[in-house]
Image (tube, rainbow, N blue to C red; front, side, top):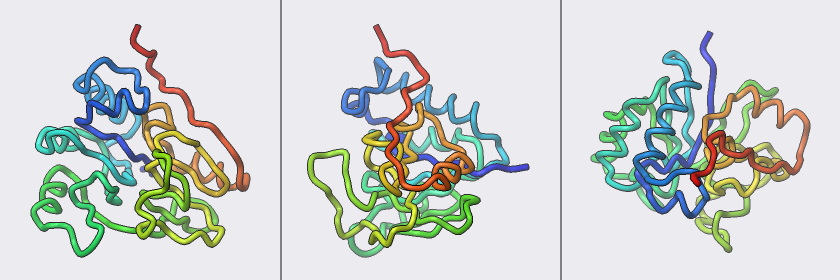
Length: 206
C-alpha cells in the first residue's frame, strides 16, 4: 500500500543554508548526499511525496540531478527559491520542463487543497498564513488568507513545527526527512497548538 509524504525546503546545493539554519553538516556535498539517502530510506518507490517548495538552489543542473535520484512520485508546489516560481505571470517553459525531466510529475503554484487523510482536505502553500524565516513577513501577496482552516506549509525553516493551525513540513522541522501525511493529520486532529521543531537525526559536526 502506498503512502503520502510531505516535505519542503531541502535547498539542494545551497551551502549557506547549513549555517543559516544550523544544519549538522560540514559541506554542501555532505548535506545533499545525506538528504538523498535519508529520503530514500524513508520513502518507497511507489509512495507519493508533495514538496511544498524550495527544493533546489546552487548550481541548478546539479541540484536537479539529485531530485532525479529520489524515490516516489514527486509533486512540487513551487516556493520562492524554485526556478518554477513566478511572482507575476507564468514561469518559463524551460524551467518547467527541466523540473519535470528531473522527476516531478506535477508542478503547481500558489495555494491548493490537499487530501492528507484528515476529515477534509487541508490548505497547502509554500508560505504560512503569517510568520517567516526572516524578521518581517515577505511575499504577502503570495500567502493564503486565514479562514481558520489547517495549513501545511514550508518557508519558516523550523521556526515551529505547529503554530496555531499552521504546520511546517520542512526538513528543518522534521529531523531532516519527509513527514508522513498520517502524522500531520494526527496533529491537526488534536486542534491548534504550539509545537517546536524536531532535532536533526544526525549529530552536529565537532
